[in-house]
Amino acid sequence: MYRIWIPVLLIILILSACGDDKPTDDKSKSTPETAPAVEIEVTPFPTLTDELREQLESTYSILSEAQAQIETVWTDLQAGRTVDCAAALKQQISPDALSRDDPISLTLQQAAIEIQTAVNLWQAECQNPRSQPPPDVIDRGIRAALAAGTALDAASVALSQ
Image 1 (cartoon, rainbow, N blue to C red):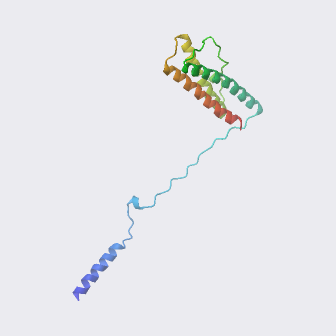
Image 2 (cartoon, helix red, strand yellow; image 1 turned 180 degrees about the vertical axis):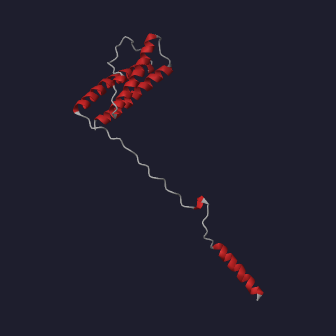
Image 3 (tube, rainbow, N blue to C red; image 1 turned 90 degrees about the vertical axis):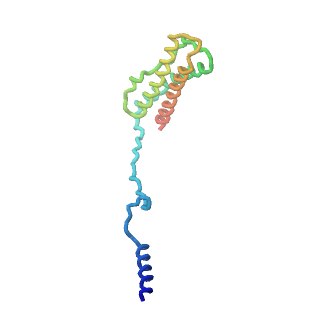
């Protein structure tokens, strides 16, 4: 009789060990928690009055002409062409003159800063005449002019809405 009870007890112990429903602290077996929802605030472009739109479009136009001219100066230098320091640069707008806090004005202000950087580099080269500016100076001038172009592209999109 003991022979029967011993295997039966062993089977009961084995089966009871298999059905363990205790919670575990093992995080790898648990369902991952979902991340909390993050709200992204989209800042709409401001509604522009006709007067403000005219002002911003005029500023955009002046900056676009200045950007195109200074970009040409730096790309010509990069191509090894000679650029005359006596050539007058287009009218510029000081970044300080763009003091409004709306997104379009801030974008135009960034363009004006980049144009001013490229122009200042060019004027410094004209003060120190040499056959060709160093490649790092040319690179800085081109990057500033291109950054201004990128800012102006963004302003153009905003103004067209």
